[in-house]
Image (cartoon, rainbow, N blue to C red; front, side, top):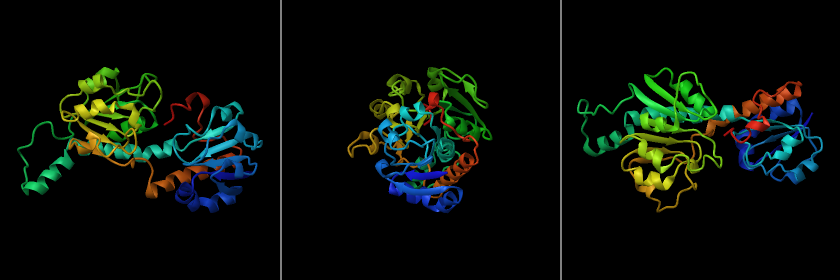
Length: 316
């Protein structure tokens, strides 16, 4: 089996380089390119961040291509309809990449429940410890957490929340049941939740989904967490509501926000630099997943994490 890679140099060094010897043991592997015009005809293509769109024109130069193994999450933007139309099998590491995103989300749910960052800031300023003069809204016992979208990441968050004394709600128009969560309407999710965590993919119908009206349903001091895509949330409305509610944003629209954007200056808002997804040693999980998928294909087995054509827009 002949295989090659297509991704940025940074992605190659971070994800592919540590397992290159394993790939070469499985197949005739190489090279790794940034321009699809430089690819030889191969049976399988390992892709990553920075891969150019695999268009119909690109596929004409790859008549033998039968499979694509993506070493990151979403395949939107580079695996085009032409790939599925030609019957090319596509695998994504979305499930592997969901693990750190879900871990980040659960950490933020618990930290914001205890108001850790704000109380640490006050402690540094006052050097006084308050153990009993704490409002009943602080803590994670009996907190209601709303999960917007039963995506791969959303389901993983629900799973990780099970050991905790929380009540979990979920809203997804395409899913009627999620183990460990109560299905509710979109408005009920925002009306009943102490924390709402956004995990919906960015689609035309989800752009601005978290609207001014929905944000207005959140109770005072509730928390909005967004690890999905910045454009899912109406950021102008959020900037206006952020004096009343709190927010944890790992994604914004655009990334990076302009220096004078009001969300930067709001103490109720924590903005992190799109770090919830795989970074550092977490890239090894993506690499291990890619090797396993290449091994399965080389052995004549189907992919473990295929991306069916009908789900390609909804796999974040």
